[in-house]
Image 1 (tube, helix red, strand yellow):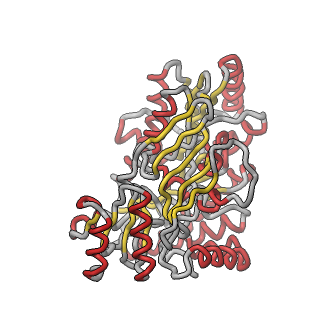
Image 2 (cartoon, rainbow, N blue to C red; image 1 turned 45 degrees about the horizontal axis):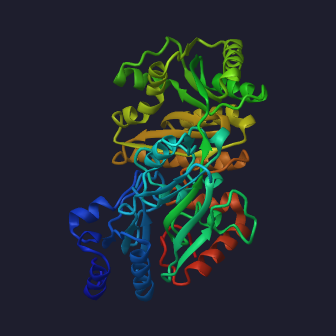
Image 3 (cartoon, rainbow, N blue to C red; image 1 turned 180 degrees about the vertical axis):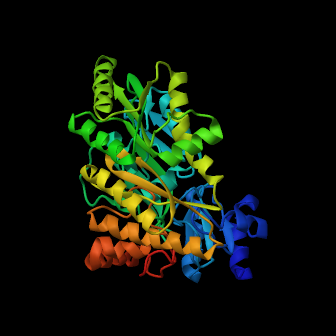
Amino acid sequence: MALPVSIADQLRAILDPEGFLDAPEDLRAFAYDLFANHRPDAVALPASAEQASAVMRLCNQHKVPVYPRGSGTSLAGSPVPVLGGLVLCSSRMNKVLEVSVTDRLARVQAGCVTGDLQKAAAAQGLMYPPNPTSMLYSTIGGNVATNAGGASGAKYGVTRDYLLGLTAVLPNGDIVKMGNRCQKDVTGFDLPRLICGSEGLLAFIAEVTVKLFPLPEGIRTALAYFGDVTEAGSVVTDIVAHRILPCTLELMDRVFLETVAEVYGVPCPEGAGAALLIEVDGPDMVLDGQMQTIERICRDHAAIGIELARSEAEREVLWKARRGGTAALVRKADMLVTLDYAVPISLLPKALGIMEKLAAEHGCDVVTIAHAADGNLHPMVLYSPSDPAQDAAFRAFSDASARAIVELGGTVSGEHGIGLEKKEYMPLQLGGEQMRIMQGICRLFDPYGIMNPGKLER
C-alpha cells in the first residue's frame, strides 16, 4: 500500500526532489538486506539532521512506521520494513566532518562509509579499528545501530568501545546530542552506548563521534593449515594461553578453503581440514618473537603447512582466501545464510564440534568460519529455500544451533545483531526481566511504537 497522499506531499515538501522516493523500482531497492525482503511504502533520504527531524515528527504524528537504514549490508533483517511504512535512510549524510590528531577523534555523518573514515584517519597516522567484513560499503550509522565488530575484535573491541558521542533524532523529532569529545566522561547515564546496538528501535542516528588510535608500527601475517576445525580451535586457545593477543585470528573450515581454491585458484594443501589466518601488530621489536611463538604452537598442533607473508603483497595473497570466500560460496547455492554466535574462548573447540554434529544430524550443508580469538563463530548454511526438505533442514539446524549455543553459555549474536533472524531467541538468552526492561526503554523513547516495528515485541 502507498502512504496517504497528504503525508507523501508533506514529505516531498520537507525533502528536496532527490530526497523522497516512491517509484516501484526504488521501493524494491530499499526492501531488503541479506536475510529478508519486505517492500516499504516510501523512502526518505534526508540531507541533514534537521530534515530527518521534520520527517520523524510527521511520521510520529500520523503513526507511520519508520525504519532507519544505512547501506543495507546487514545479515539479520534489522532494517527491513516488515510493516511497510517509511524507510529513513542516511546515505546522503555521508561526510567525514573532522579528524583531530590532538583529540584523537573523528566526527562523521551517519551515512559515512566505514572504509572512508578509516582512510581519512590513516591519512593522519591514526586508525579506526572496528573492521566489519562489509567495511568498504557499510556505514558508521549502521555500525553503531548494530554495534558492529569484525576480524580485529579480540584485540580492539567493537563499535561501542570507540563511541564518544552521537547526534540522535528521537521519534518525536527532537534532536539530541549525546556524549562529547572527551576521552573520559562518567557524567550521567551512558546514552550513546544505549543507542549503540539498539537496531533502530530508539532513534535515527544522524552524526557520530569516535575515538581513534595511532597506527601500529608493524604487522606480521601467517596462514596455517590443520587437519580439522577442532584442532585449529585448540591452536586458538593455546595462542591466547601464551598471552599473545592477535589483532586477527580467522578460522576457515575445509569447504570454505576448497571453494576459494576452486573459484579463485588459491592453493590449499592436501588433507587440510581447516586454516587459521593469524596477524599480530604493534612495535616491530616484539612482533618477530610473537610470530615465532605462534609458528611453534602451530607445529606442535601438527600444522600441515604454514605460510608467512614477507611483504604487503604477500599479505594480500594470504587475505584473499578469507575475503573472497563468502562471495565464492554464494555461487554454490540459491541461498547463503550466515549465522552468528559467540562463546567463551575456552569453549570454541567444543562449539565448533557441536556445529559439525548438528549439521550432520539435520543433513544441512554448513560451512564454518570464525573470528576465533574472541570466540565468534559463523556457521554459513547453503540451501535452496524452494526445496521444502532443504528449507526444513536449514530451519531445524538454525533452531538447534541457537539453543545449543545458549546452553553452552554463549550468545545468539556476537556482531550481526538480532533483527528478524534471532528475535525469538532473545528471551531464551536474556530471560523475562531483561526483556521487560528493554521493552520499557523502547516505550519511553517511542510511545507510539513507530520505530522499526516488528523486531521487538512492545
